[in-house]
Amino acid sequence: MYYIYSFEKLEVYKESLFLNVTIREIVKSWPFEERYELTTQIKRSISSIAANIAEGSGRASNNDRAHYTNIAYSSALESISHLNLAK
Image (cartoon, one colour):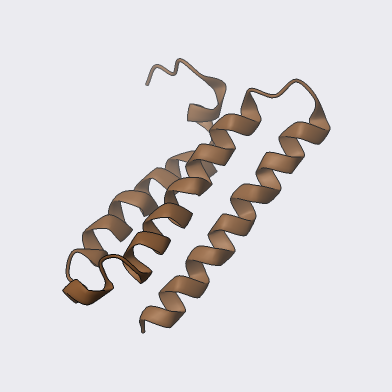
């Protein structure tokens, strides 16, 4: 497979994209009244994982890259919380 950007090679990035697609399919079955509350929140937190991995990879310093990795991790934890609430 051909990659343009280095972050596209990362397993964690690939998994976050897969998770994004999976969650978007799951929330389609949730009640309509959740569409603008929990559904919106989980879609944002899930997509934030991949976005922050990508953004961090473009940073020059190790501290900046670590900062965006931490944000991606925090978004993953937020997503877990949203999924727990949806049970």
